[in-house]
Length: 301
Image 1 (tube, rainbow, N blue to C red):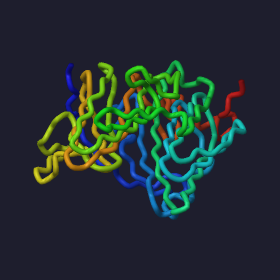
Image 2: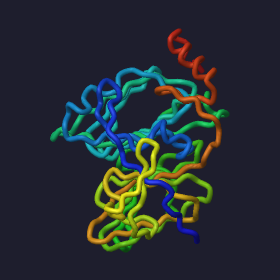
Image 3: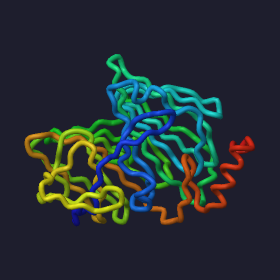
């Protein structure tokens, strides 16, 4: 088995989105197409309601899927198809925008004002850009949690581990989405599909990836840096993109590490992206925004 090596390392950066939501972007437009089929990963963890309470009022999406995973607090959503609901601690919403949807997402903190969550965008291939919109909402109680002999905990949102399957199914890019906690003085090895894009985003603690113990270079504003004073482990807010291989390895020393492990099948198509809409050509992008302005964006069945 060939263990994947570290290809690139990124640190999440603060951005302002929606109506004034302060969050950290782990990867986005500048990193296209390195994470194909994934487009964006936002980290909206905060203990201060002023950072998130203005939320994400009505806005369109087309050509993508958005995956929202909440750890603390709640997110209330409504859309143009008269769907509405609330996802709370431990819940996941996998929204396929497809041909087009207009929705809003309004976060609210828990009783202590904490709002913790992540939103991942997955691209759709040209053949499925205009598929019918749909939701897969998954409650915490429906997400399997696997505990290994060494104490490693795996929350299986999408994909499979051994003979256990996650509740989110029938996704175009064949993704895997795991929330993993590895205790101190332990190692976790997970098989991955060859030629799939695989990355890890650390959300707590620290760990060593790919058994590497030397300081790694990291990318910032499109430039590579190498810091010999930097510790060789990945810590909170670190995004690690892996090279190709059969498996990933994570090791810990005194501290435990918690991370999201995400993978998917690359699409390999041109990307035309502006705001919340991602198509294949500039012409398709112009059509989408013209339809949005003309109130013909939503396609009726």
